[in-house]
Every structure is written in C-alpha cells, then in structure tokens.
Amino acid sequence: MAELAKLGVALEDLDMLTERFNEVLKLFDELSCTPTDTVDPLAHPLDATQPLRSDTVTESDQRTSMQSVAPAVDRGHYLVPRVVD
Image (cartoon, rainbow, N blue to C red; front, side):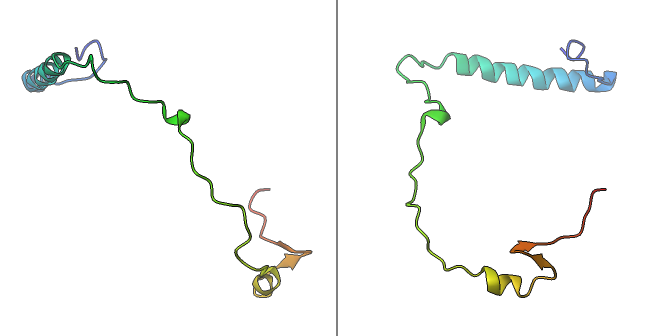
C-alpha cells in the first residue's frame, strides 16, 4: 500500500506500518456492518437558510471624529502609505 501511495517507508518501519493499516481496515469492516437502512442522509449545508437581522442603523455617524485623529485624510478617505510600486 505504501508503494502504491508513493510513500517512502524505511524497511524497519514496514511491520509497524502494516499493523497500523490493518487496524484501520478492521475499523472500516466494523463500520460497514452497521445497519444504516433507517438513517436519513444528511442535508446539504447549502440548503439551510440563515436568519437575518433587520437592516437598521444602530450607531450615529462618527466619521468626522474618527478622521480627526487619523494621520492623513483626503475628502473623507483615509490615506495610507503606498506599499506596492
């Protein structure tokens, strides 16, 4: 299996790795015996809808007071140093 997956496994680790893979495969065998005929499949997460809050203004306009402490402002916009030439 390690060869098929293109894994580089040292020969001394091969026995331990084989045991671990066999343990995982046993778990899959146990799970495949579980009856799932009466279990409904899970719904797709994109089918759900999110409750939205009402779009109301909850704060007053504070742009002037916020921009009064900004290092550089021009016509209501914050000016930042250019980082890409």
